[in-house]
Figure 1 (cartoon, rainbow, N blue to C red):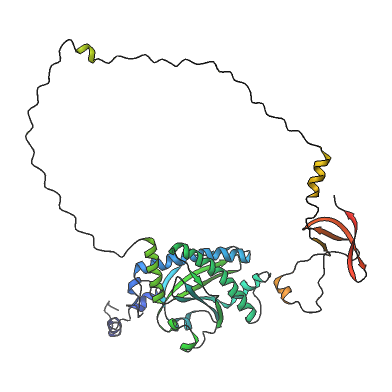
Figure 2 (cartoon, one colour):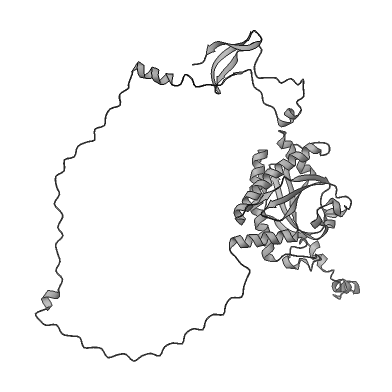
Length: 390
């Protein structure tokens, strides 16, 4: 073409459709701060509010990553969050399905709730690691056991996150136990099936989460605009920064005082000739104080002597003879994963680390003191000591 716009392009510009091209170029919708409403969203945050939400999320999720790393015994990295806007119909077309919605309700310090969204495959790997597995993605669908395990992980993560937020906002922040549900985004959902604030435009905080070499994925938190503004106001109140106010006008500089004429110098009185020698300072020689002779002798300590009195030793041990000690006979030990323990049922046989016929250990207050063999005394079990450990 010769550089002229067609009629369709002119109509698109006049109808405000030109904003879609910027989103197609890679800029997330709503990332322009207060321009979010102009980009098709009914509400938006100021730049200061977005920065505060991002800062609070960054610190709280950093603490949550440390907790998850300890829980899974894997290195967990969560990147700096990205704050943007979204609506429900965008999840129906953009996010992986199905996914897990984890509802987090605040019971103290903050008013409202937020939703943490994770992919189904990530939840499978995390729950497998929690149950002592290798982290390989499990086959089959998620069940109640997986949802219960991910709720426990999120409870510990968000609990530590609430502790960080409490220190940051200088007030107690507490949450109720999270609830998890598997949501299929392939079809539209009724308003009663999702949180109320998801039926309108909402704030989306995205993170990139890496767990060892097993997970490299995106998780996100969803806030309502009211919750984000409440978080911002408490953050600013604790930081001691108030809303920007017009600076007071500077006070006018005082007018310079007129220079006064220099006063005539008063004549210096002349000293009498006979007083001049007395005004000159005389240097006094430094004299050291006489050192007195001091008699110094080394310190003599009383030598430690060991008292070998049988009488005293007998009296001391007699004071302890009536102290009760717990004696335990240990038949053997083994270790099981959480998954194996959950499979226990009446009749389950547990193999121990001891062969048949080996002596058993005798422990006193948890300390190994002897070996013995099991005997039956009338109708009760007993232990015959065969060896005392020195």
